[in-house]
Length: 276
Image (cartoon, rainbow, N blue to C red; front, side):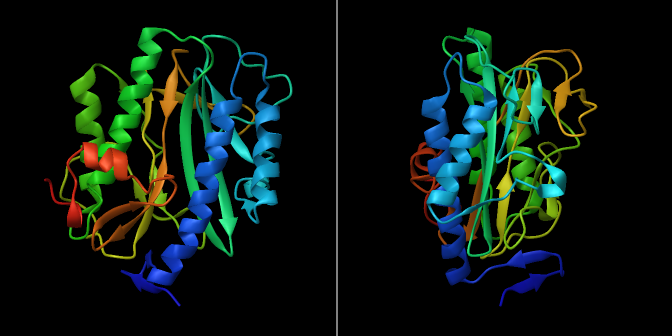
């Protein structure tokens, strides 16, 4: 069985990390399927049905469906919707939109969780840049997730990159989390803050890191449906997420098809997370 740290952070054995990789790979492949399916005229409920079929056909169970009453297999958040958008038959994607798709799957009791934000047709340069900045900030956070680091080293890396790229709104009140035998576990991982705080990262810890970045201000509000979070100013938002494991050789990104090799190499992260 897994060990516990302080005692809240679940630490996995190598065998348990492999089970999480199976769940993560299913999530990653589902998101790639949905990325290809996003186009003008498609509804968010169409995408949801595709995701559920793919997860179940490949031996998984959707993490989100039924979670505190949530009705979807995915969260589908369009334009000013930041996170937790409910898939709907009447939500039709249009050229120029951006859609955040958040997906989770369970395989043999272990969870994977990841998100991408995808352009619908041709989008503005401003929105394209938002997607690029948000995704790059995720990878900088992941690159900081090495054994011996502090939890908020990831938070600081995310914030520092976003701040260096312009006057974006970094969403507060939502963030990354521990993950394993449950989808949401301790600790919360903010997307902002000073480095050097929080628990020391240990081999076998697994986290989901997920920056949410707005074109306008950081202010958000939850709609009356009890789920959908939107920007107060109505401007677009982006959301990217991966699940990763802390290993002796650096971050292992369980929901990335290549386990993060391309991005981490680009960022100069080599063995044990050291810069090359």
